[in-house]
Length: 218
Image 1 (cartoon, helix red, strand yellow):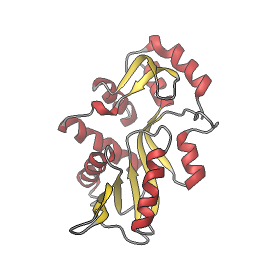
Image 2 (tube, rainbow, N blue to C red):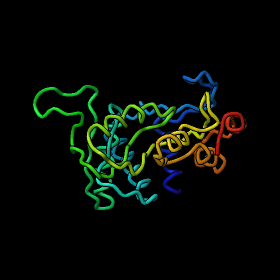
Image 3 (cartoon, rainbow, N blue to C red):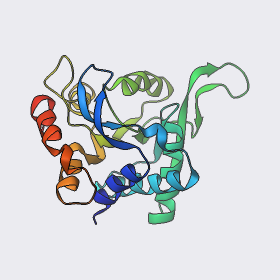
Image 4 (cartoon, helix red, strand yellow):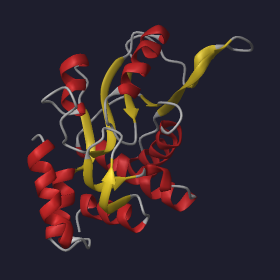
């Protein structure tokens, strides 16, 4: 299996990717659901970091620091930093934002590497539904330093248009901010994995394809 196929199987095996009928926050009825909250063990987190590291390496993204948006992005950035070092010998910094500015001690908005002008950073997130997390993080990054955002890495690109746009969240982020978003896998990869027998769920293929036809983008 490719590492993308392995990741899809990993999500299914850990109850993160499920098939059925689900009502999403958008109100849409989807034949699948992704719940990254089901990652909860050291073994899962270790393997997850390796997939993020593979995605960064495969796409040739170069940077000095990984940024993990609070809260879900914090463990993701840490495990990705560890995996990049163990797998590729790349010793990258990591940092994460505070929800509130610390007004005592060293103070500041970020914990970990203190950002500097000209520093290239990679933002590590779980999934992107609307781009809200990035919109909240960008002002904090710019307040800290004049950094260059090399990329944003997410686990799954839903390839789904927004409620008020013909673009997906990934496409909107690139159009609005010029931030390139790379995903470990896409919804097209998941459909292909079902078709190839990598994971079970062929009974859901008609609804998956119908949903893609209705809401999907390329």
